[in-house]
Image (cartoon, rainbow, N blue to C red; front, side, top):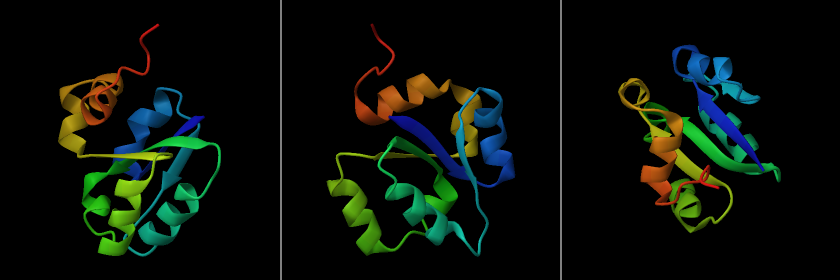
Length: 101
């Protein structure tokens, strides 16, 4: 399973530099279409999304996300990225350390 990141250029650049391969750069006009495209991909297990775009998703889609087992959607703000590393954010969101051996 892959990790995908969805956000504007400022949001995704750190993830891109850290080696995340599935990067979806979005803007105000295409965030919904790109999210739905990523959400339906079979090989994506975790979607990390910029919180400012997550908040704009329609209520019907947020309900679908809440019920989804895979992929898991983690929304974070740019200020969260600077405060801690991605594994800690995912652990806090999921309650599970995915990198623990």
